[in-house]
Image 1 (spheres, chains in turn cyan, orange):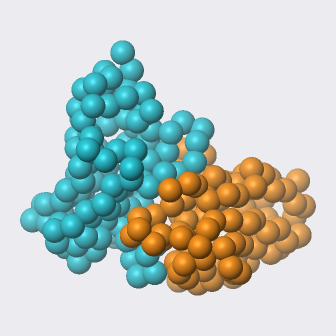
Image 2: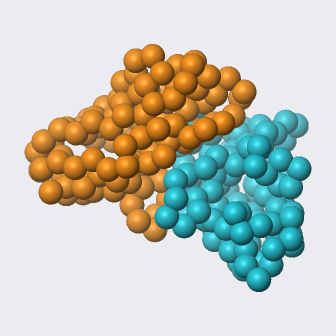
Length: 118
Length: 110
């Protein structure tokens, strides 16, 4: 069955970097745009970034531009989010999600918690 | 991009219908018919319940329905059940090719 499994979260100090991953299975990963969405503790969902099916184009929300970078390796069916210069405002559960027709997110991973703290 | 505006909470008794609003702008909700709704239980990932304003994923209960007028969209839950108690979020594609979520609504079944 279709699965998205995030990994790589943890506690990181302010100003440091972290890369999180999302392993996809059960569908043809290379045919779909993918997204990262985050949710700070007790807060609403926030769209973070998207990358098209072949990795040649991506977009990031303004608050992470220049610090975060979404990428993918279709040979490994894996989505990545490289996060640099982390601040406490980046503390959140990070979900990967598949985009389907209708510009919607039809499948989500279980999330990985990134906690930025000294 | 500012978050779409939703009421913080909505409540209803079992069997009743409730409606959750989602207000945006002409750059997001009003621009396309690309409004989605998600249900989220505490500690769980969001689940898609409505896409393209009013379409339900295969197998989803027809108690959930969506609509849109101008810059606002709505989710209606009819025949409210205890299992509907959750957080609900709207989302929209935008004219800058990005996405925006709503502020979220907690549904309480009385």
